[in-house]
Image (tube, rainbow, N blue to C red):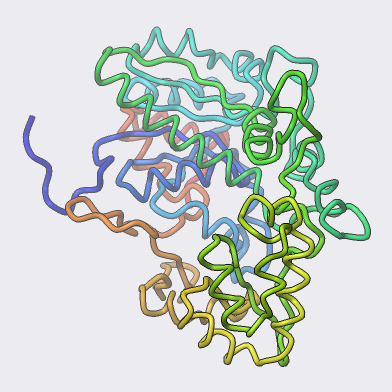
Length: 405
C-alpha cells in the first residue's frame, strides 16, 4: 500500500453516504468528515430541519446546521422518484458506509434494505440510528432528545439532586453521546471490513445506549443480585454538589482524594476535630456522607473572592475553576490560547466562528476542508461522479428529483 501524504486525514479515501438529519447522525458523520472522510449528505428537497433554526443570515443556513455539517457535500434526492433512487444506488456501489436515521422498515419500503445494498456492494456497511432496539415494545415509537432524557431518568435525578421540579438538561446530551458511539462503531466497522472483506449491518439504538451511559454511574446497589442497596451514586446526586458561592461569585471545586481533603483542611485552618470525624476520614466515608463534606466546603468558600480562591487552591494543588457562562466560555483564555476557535469566511454566510477539532495528530491532522454546504450545492458534481448522464440530470432537475444550489 502506498504511503499517504503527511497531511492526508486519517480517513482519507473513505466515502460515507449520510442520510441522517437534525443532530445525532450529522454530529457522528461530521466527526468522520473532519478526519478526512468524503461525506455525502443526502437531503430531501426540503433540506435538513436544522437549516431553518435561527439565528441565520440566509434561509437554509441556520447556525446549528453550520456546526454539524462542515466538510460535507450536499446532494438533494427525492427518493420517492425512481431516478433519484437509481442515483443513490449508483453512489452506494462506491461507498464504504451508509448511515441513516429513519426506521429500517421505511428504508426497506424505499428499496434500500441492507440486503439489496449488500448485493450491489458487498463491502458496504449500513448503520441504522434508531430510537429503540427493534426487538422491544418501543420499536416503532418516535424518539427525540427530551423523550430519551425522560426515559433514562435525567429529570428525576435532577430532583434527587435538589431541583424543585423535573427538568431537562439544557444540552442535547443523548443525541451527542449516541452520535459519538455511532462514530466509534463506524470506524470499528471499517477496520473489521479491512480484515474480512465484507460489510455488515449495524443498529445503534438511543435508549439502550443512553441507559448504559447513565446506569454505568448510577446502578449502585442494584449491581448486585440480591441488591446491596438502591440505585444511584451518592456523591453526584447530593443536593449540595453544585458550584460554591464565593464572596463575589461562584467557583467549581473538587476536594476529592484524601490528599485533596488534607490540603483543603490545611488551607482553611480547620481544627483537628474535622480530621478525626469518621464521616470525613477517607474518600469512601466522604462519598457516603457527601452532604457533610460539601457543607463544610461551601461555608469556607464564602469567605474569599473567586480570584483569591483560584490562586490559593491552585497553590494547594486542589482542582478548581471559575464558573463560566456561555458567553464567557467563548472568551475563555485557555480556548483562545489553544486555537479552539477559528474565524472563517463562508462563501454565502460571510465570517463565521467555527470550533476546531479538539484532538491533535502528528501525521494526519483533522482539517476544515469545506464549509457547511448550501442545499444541493454539490448535486450536479455528485450525480456526474455517479455516472448519471447529462440528459438524465436535466430530467431530474425538471422533476425536482434533485435540486442544485
